[in-house]
Image (cartoon, rainbow over all chains, first blue to last red; front, side, top):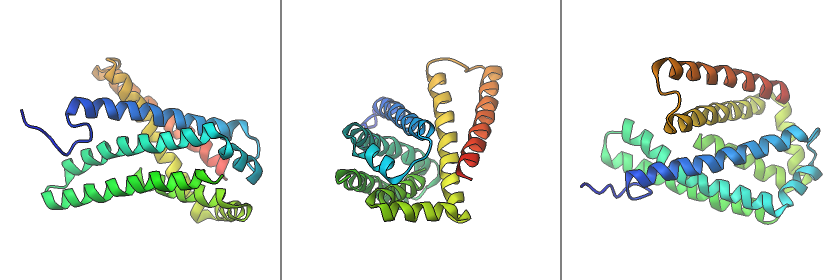
Amino acid sequence: MVNVVVSAGRNGVHDFILLRASAIILVLYTLFLAAFFIVTPSVTYDVWQAFFACMSVKVATMLALIALLVHAKTGVWQVLSDYIKPALLRGVLQFLFSVLLLAYIVFGFSIVWGV
Amino acid sequence: MVFAIGILLLTLSTSLSSAEGFATIQGYLDGIFFKFIIFGCLSALTFHVLAGVRHLFMDLGHFEELDSGNMTAKLIFVLWLAISVAVGVWLW
């Protein structure tokens, strides 16, 4: 058996599950935000700030960003391994996208931390 | 999608930083350029979610035949257009 060491879940079946589990978290968070905008007639700064001051919204936001790392890591790998043939370029791009996704988590944490 | 999330995160950061930051974003959203970018992000996200949910149903063994698969493919296009129009109306 060939071990694919570049995959997030160490094997294809684990990647498959991770991609779908993270997708479910991301859909639920998207619906949650959409519901907020639908039930809130006019979103002012006070309403917006109070919404993100709520601990459960902060936790949901961070959970979504961690799910995004898992989801997009595999998603980017699928696209790159299909379309970028030179191994070095593919590796560099995968590295850059992974770092960007990690940066999103740190950025998201700093956004919701002080609210 | 990765870059769309980056744009949305930057928007969230500015809008939550202060009342002035929130007003800045509101000002940007009054302009056609930023409005169109946010519309593009939300429209792409909508399509990705709809197609993803369809994919999950197929993982569970539904809509895997040619006829039903074509039907759900067309269905998500219709839903995507409808939701995109609704998002557009809401933004404008």
